[in-house]
Image (cartoon, rainbow over all chains, first blue to last red):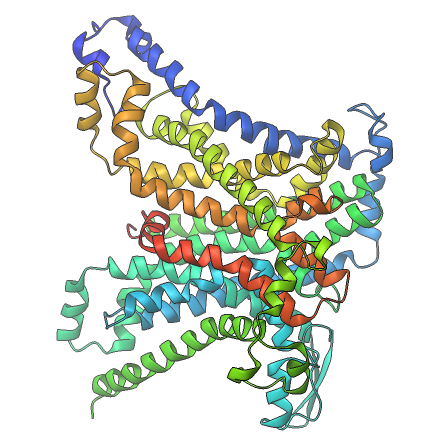
Length: 332
Length: 288
């Protein structure tokens, strides 16, 4: 009990065995539940119930047309999961999702950190620069994907126009529809997954402001004294970053990694709008959508979504397991 | 020159290079969008690399085309703006109505299950929207909420209430309890305390939270696509624009005009309340 209510103040309950259930505590209990109930009901109906139903659907043979007459518990089957794991493209789609997620998460955090360090010291107009850098994050996804698509277009895009005229590209590059782009680098032949790299770049561009915002807030809370002391002791800028700022930032970076990983792993609209999931960018969430809308195969879509969620939880479990172990080791 | 001096100079210069590069990277796409929206389509095809519009070429016919109703040969974005506004404002009002008492109860009252309930609210973001999409799609088809703005708003409330509670809770924990205790001694009930004392004090935080919720609802795309794709009269701006891109050959410049119209409300609101918003979101991040 951190907050004694007025009721207990006016009429302190005697320290008897019924103390845990004094009238004022019961009233507080009721009030608390009443106050959270609207939220709780919405979350239960729109989030918890559908998830439970997804689990059920995943184990049933269900197409959208059958659902009208179907009961909640139809004939059970694991067919959907067999279909998910054996369907062509599932494993490559999972790999794509992982590359996209790791690239987008790491990239946005690194760029956010660089931005936060650059904007750390005050200068004239810093407030304006800071809010401007948040624009990619707050702008509607449909609008910004349109701009990227237009700018990268091989026919009318400014990037290809400049590339061919000023940078000496031989022909325009279809950034968003090339799944494999041959490159010769010092006699070394390789193929770049160009479309995937482009959507990762988009992800970094759109979400670095999020990381930047949190890290700048943390940086500004680092007491100036520590750094000044280190400076007096002759620590250089990079040493101060490595030994003072980075340890201070680590908790925020860890939190951001988890948040961004979850968000990117489940991301649908950015890729759907940029490439439609074509050219080697079909992440699992786009696949789920295609299962649902192209074939109305609800069971397979549910199974696919469930597999995605389970994989995410396993990855988070590994992460937290590793993290908890490290904390224990540090304490030991 | 010592290593320390060298580093000071190097990073002192690099800092400005980084700031300039980041500013260009963030601003250029928006500049490009606005510039293209004022260009005639033919000119874009002729000079795709041009960075500005010659004054005599500037046109607003793109905006006319995108905004006018389809009956007049336009793309009907005005109607979609109305739909987007209805859904977003409805979501903001209802989300705040649910989140304010919820956040207050979680930060001030002790009740059975309060910890589990706040954990559940955060867990909402663990589950992919696609996992919810399948059953919600079916559920809404069953109860006839498919193709309705109300159904969409309900989903948005579920998606935004948890973050709203989180932001408001952080704020409430900075308000001294003694003010509320004084009101309670004066005979205010809990509801009266909430309405007369807490709400006025939380005004800045309410603004920030409301704005964030508005932005999420206004920008949302997946659920709008799932529930409204078959009913063009209910399309939100985001959905309508993406459908124009797919279905018919709408010129790029007109789509850019539509994107400008879609982006302006968010950016205006963002600059108006930016300070509240960044503080509301990062409260707690500055404590390790």
